[in-house]
Each structure stands twice: as structure tokens, then as C-alpha cells.
Amino acid sequence: MKESFTLPEIDRIAQSIRPKLINAPRVGLILGSGLGSLAEAVEGQVKIPYGEIPDWPVSTVIGHQGQLVNGTLQGQPVLVMQGRVHYYEGYSMAQVGLPIRVMQRLGIEMLFVTNAAGAVNPAYEPGDLMLIVDHLNLIGMAGLTPLRGPNLDELGLRFPDMGQAYDRQLANLARQAADESEIKLHEGVYVCLAGPSFETPADLRFLRNSGADAVGMSTVPEVTVARHGGTRVLGISGISNKANLDGNTLTTHEEVLEAGQQIVPKLIAVINGVLRRI
Image (cartoon, rainbow, N blue to C red; front, side, top):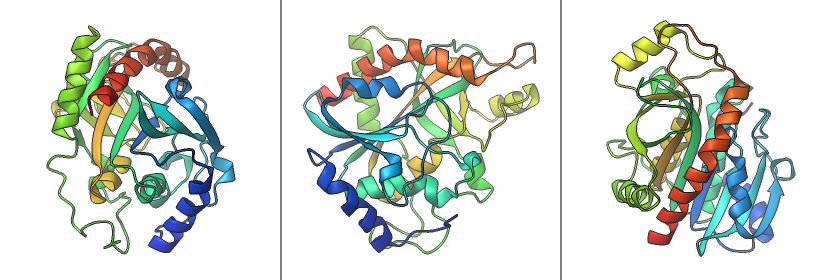
């Protein structure tokens, strides 16, 4: 399990991918649990299984297909991660952040991150979308960060500012796209936990009192790497289950995947609307 990657190591991975691409991507997309079918909308696509990419971490979770998809969406050249890896799978934080580093070296200017998240805000319903306007990096505060180790000065500063982790212009475009398609788009704070267990009612009450609106086990490490490298970020959570603040409901991964069927059409509409506007 590697705890850090050098720039030559990252570039070797990027060089192994580049000849297989049909275009140089401008936008990177990461699709979370149950959201992988969004990649089917990519036009003129080529698929690269993660297992064929040297040192690329391979997804082990149901609902994460585990391949790169290159092509165009709304005329924009994209590179889609159809599935991601998580810290709880046994990967280091450096490995979790590695795909973002590689996409940066392949030339992406923007990163759209999506996830299936549990509601912390009791007003959220399964199938809703939430625009991520900020995050609470609990695992990063505890020391689990993909920036641990030697800094890659060629990519970013040792101490990157996270005051605007989520790009305000891209957020405005997402609002416009949601309005255009008459989709309810909540706005809130996403909190990242290590997982893989779902939260206790006490956990959720604590998180709610801390200002969180949705909770998941991904995204924040990827956003941290993206911002370290100067990549603009749009984040959207698909709400997969109600807030279990009283402990009277059971949360399952199957429920998360089923909610994806409601979420994906809305997510496609919003992302396509943003891509048309950039």
C-alpha cells in the first residue's frame, strides 16, 4: 500500500492512458455508488478498465463498475471515472487521490464529483440532489489526507487554501441548469467519514449539530487533491436515504443503489446543463 506517489510515477500512469483516449479531456467526472449509468450518455466513447491501468486502484464495491470512459458530453471532451475507490477498501489516501493526479496530468481543467450520500438534514428525501457548497473534512482533520508526505511542488502549494473548495461559478451554472429542468436542488455541507459502517443516530445528531446536511465516505479526499492542483470543482450529492436521527430505520447499500435510479436522470440533466454553459 503506497503512502505517496512521485510526479514521474504519476506521469507514467498518465502516459499509459493517453494513447487510448479519443480526445484530450477538459472535464473529469467521478460517478459514485449507483450513479455509473450516467456514463452511458457519453458519446463516441472508449472504455478503459481500471485493471488495465498500471498502479490504478481498482474498485471493489458493488455499484462501482471500475473503468474510465472517454468521449464527449454536450460537445465537451470528458474523462469519466465509472466508480471510485474508498479508504475503507484498504487503500491509502494517496491511492484514493491518485486518479485525480493522473487526470490533472492528462489536462482536465474542471472536476465534477458526484456521490450517493445519506441525509443528515431531515428535510432531504431519497432521490433529491444537493449542490455541495462546502464540506466538513472529519477524516482529514484526524490526519487521513491524500496530501500527506512530500509535496509535489510542480502541482501545488504545500499548504493549499480550501476557502473556496467548490467553484462558485460552476455552482451558479448548476443552479441555472436545475432551474431550467425544474429540478429541486438543495444546497448544503457534505461531511466525509471513513466508513464502511453507516452512522449511528448519535453520529447523525452530532453531524447535524456540526452543520452537515449530507454524509458519505468519499469525495472530500478527491476534492482536496483537485484543489491542491488548481482544478475547479463542482460537487453534487444524490440523497440515497432519509436521516435516521432516531434509530428507527435500517440503512443498507441496496437502498443506496436503488435510490441511484431516481437520482441519475436528474444528475444527467444538471450536469448536461452545466456542460452546455461552460
